[in-house]
Image (cartoon, rainbow, N blue to C red; front, side, top):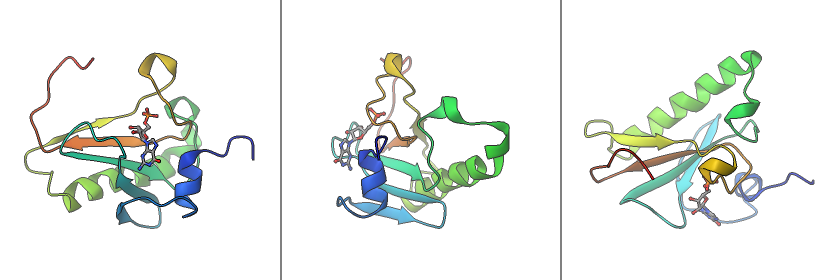
Length: 115
Ligand code: 5GP
């Protein structure tokens, strides 16, 4: 498959990952190069390249994805103090894996604006 990415392989369990949460809609695992004390990637089981591919008909799927992000944050104990959710999208944002994913960053105070 020409668009087979690292995250497709992690979803198929062909490449190991430190999974922190899984349900029918999402898989969440620790980022291999963490940028905060907690840095988890949440990947929907439905495949999109990035945010630009989302269409009106995907509303239910995207809803499950975002609810999955909320579940992961709760599982990680981040809901009360807060956390950042990042969708790097395209070259200007330095997206490196062409499979939509949410970064959950937490466990420390954040700065704004981001780099
Ligand atoms: P992007 O730059 O596309 O927004 O995010 C891709 C993320 O995947 C990066 O934060 C990077 O550290 C992470 N990553 C790259 N290779 C691996 C890997 O093999 N395993 C895990 N768990 N994360 C990875």
